[in-house]
Image (cartoon, rainbow, N blue to C red; front, top):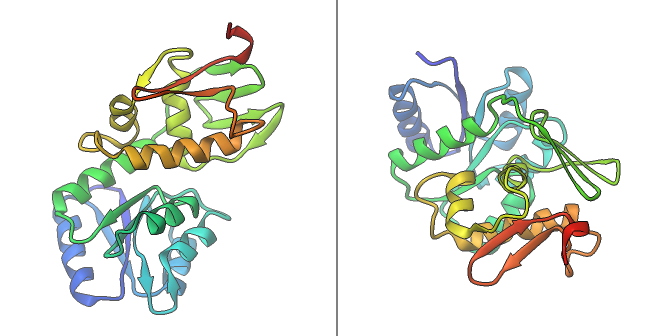
Length: 230
């Protein structure tokens, strides 16, 4: 049995049973909650390694749960919902969700995304990268802009980390999606655009006129030191 504990939050008993059975068969320990209040209490009392969270709950929404969790927890959160509109996805991601899966979803895909989410929070030994006023501590997963700490969600930091490992290099959409979200995400260009826009709001003096995170139209993005640009 794995020591990884997953909290599943859904008010439909059939879905809870199905997810519990599948996750246990995959080697995870599983806890469950059927409401927003119960979910927050469960994370506080016995923090899991990851949360699989339904968007619509009897006493609130998954987005609201994410907002509350992000005040005191960095646990990976995967939102699982029948609502597939991009606006809802963006709202959930902005609230701090790490991933958003539209129902119905195959268990193999869910397990793959769960493994990816857990890998993103694994400890690593990596260097400190400085680009202009950006100071990116890849080991501690911390960012400072002009000496001030800036909070990033796990996905936002992973995107920044991939580019910081290759400063000045053009990284394609497909490469970034594969490195940050894993295999099978190569065509999710809208997901990448959302996170690039979020990241620019945190690192750029003027997100509308980026100096660090540059777009190469039709190709990808590159992270640069403004002082080295011609």
